[in-house]
Length: 198
Image (cartoon, rainbow, N blue to C red):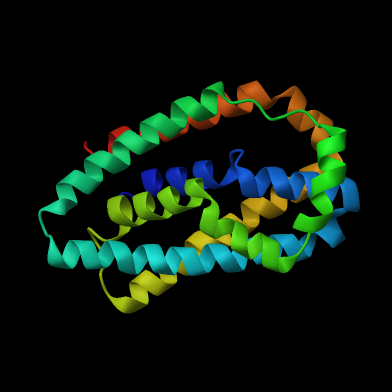
């Protein structure tokens, strides 16, 4: 396994803006970090369940259709390239106070954080890409799939927690340097995509 490209992909995809991170930041900004933890733990739990599902779904595909490995690595690379350009062009939505006031309360719970994962297209593609491109070509035992699922979920928890801290403390700083941050993350993701085929 190419460890550095794998870690870059996992960290960049987890730490860049997405539904989990934006919601965690908005909730922590409104209610404080401690009160956002139910949502953050819900995200981590849902993330773990989804990574386990992605692991076994991808493992089943590889077991029954061995020729799909090459196609999955190409699709994974293309998705990473697409995601890198989306990240470099993306902008955080500036605080829309009315929208925040109307929506954060109902989202600030363990259950909503967990269920968000099952409608979060970014997380589903993230799991399938990480597992099909970096893990299953090298590790196929049940214990490996479970441990990697826990690792991916842990990184997701760390990233969402960071955004909650940003929401509680540093939101203005994050907005100020958002473009530079996104460009740097996008370049790291392009490197990960290219290194899969070197």
